Each structure stands twice: as C-alpha cells, then as structure tokens.
Length: 117
Image (cartoon, rainbow, N blue to C red):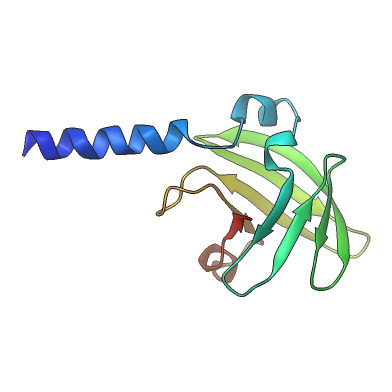
C-alpha cells in the first residue's frame, strides 16, 4: 500500500512542477504566464493579452484584468468592464493535470473551466 501512496504523491508533484503558471510572478502582478487563449467545454474561448485586456472571443466582449492575490497555487483576479465585473481564478493542474481558469462567481463557472489552447 505504501508504494501506491508514494506513486500518487510523485505524480502530484510532477503535475505541480509542470504547471505553466508562474505564481511568484503572478503575485507581483506579472500576468505573462496566463497570456494566451483558453477554451472551455462549451467551445467558448477567452484571450488574455500581455496588457491585461481579456477578450471573450465569441462576443468580442473586452474587459481589464486586475490581479488581486495568490494563495495555495491559485491566482485570484477581477475582470472589469464598463458594465460588469467577474472573478477570475487561475489554478494549477486540474483533474487532468492541466492548468485552468475559472471565470465567474457561480457554480456554473466552476463546472466549465477554461483550458489553455
């Protein structure tokens, strides 16, 4: 049984080390490690640019990313436009070992994460 436990532990560490998210930089407001296009299971995608603009590709909706904090390998930010705001979280290594974004505050958002293209 011990060997099995060790195996799980080493896989978990491998996932964390493969994370493309640079939490140290994100914590200092450097969002370069989340720049790019991310897509969810509904086929919706968002593009995050180096200047912090975030565009929802299906609608052309554009907002501004405002970094807040990093805690427990999760980057928290707000997404603000003239008319609305949403929460954004960048999380390392989901169930399939890939980094993902959750955009929005509700359970629906939680169930439809965005993965890096």
